[in-house]
Length: 144
Image (tube, rainbow, N blue to C red; front, side):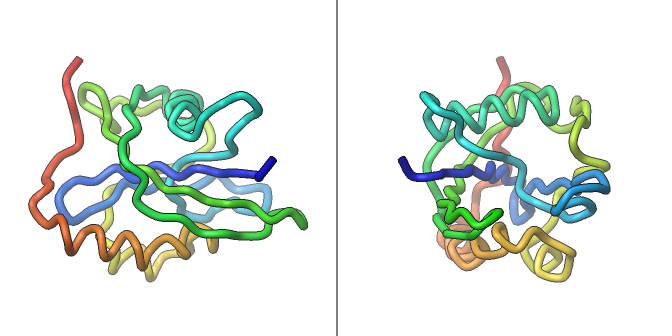
C-alpha cells in the first residue's frame, strides 16, 4: 500500500490558508498547508476532515484534488496529495490550535519566502497554475 499524506488548500481570493507548527520535531516552526497522513482504511478526503478537526477543531469539506508531489519522510517515500477545502461556518476565526502556533492567509509570493515545509513547497507550481486559471474564487467558507 502506498504511503499517502494530504494537504488542505483553503483559499480566500488570492490567499491560501497556512499554519506554523509548534517548535519541536522535524517540522517544528515551519509553515505548512495543514494536513497529515492518511490512516489505514481511510480515504484522502476523510483524512483531511479528520486532520482539520484534530489540529484546529474546525469542520471542513474536502473538494477536488489540486496537486500531487512525492517526498521522503524518515526513509519512506510518500505521496502528497493536495485538495481544495472549504471551512464550514466562519472558518479559521474559530480555530483552536493544537499543533500550530499561528495561522494566516498568505499569497503564494509570501509563501515562497517563508520557512515552509519542503514537501509542501513542491505543490506550489500546480497551486500557482490553479490560482491563475481560477482568479475569481473569493471565499471557500460555507454556512451549515
